[in-house]
Image (cartoon, rainbow over all chains, first blue to last red; front, side, top):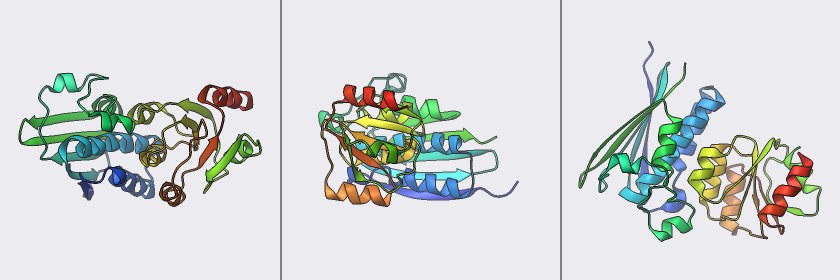
Length: 141
Length: 108
């Protein structure tokens, strides 16, 4: 198997207006690689939700995307407050976002559920006070 | 129906129109961006009253054919320029969301 193609992005936690930049770049790259549109959509949505979460909750972080013959893997790493109760956080509608975030149209408690829905594999590793790492994979074949 | 076809009606006007030949296959309505992101389909016309810059990322990633801002909502110049840059069609209408949906239903 040929080596994975990797992309690395820094997600700026200060700038809510540019949130989504990394996801849009990934979408563009995957298009150039000729991946099926539905797969690109899955990756883009899952990654955007993760990116927004890092901006809202963790003051930013980093995103590493690798593309292999079999899947696209997204690893999101932040040094935010961590997730206290992952099971609760995974429930649709549960959110700890502020009113300010809600007024922007986020904080509906759909972020993590959407990430799960649009990826074929998702793993959350989170330590309260240290940060969160989320790994998602979308199968190509 | 294309985005161009919608604009032949005086009920809609263009805010940003980088790709007027985009096909509109269906309609999605919503203001909660994560909800829209997860549920809107590619080639949907997306009706909303949200007008902050994040709607551009949502439209781009969900691959909607256009954003229709209802109730006469509009966007500032910066968002307009970014929309052109990201190739996102944005229209505005004075109709409310319900009226807009009914109007589109008659055309689809």
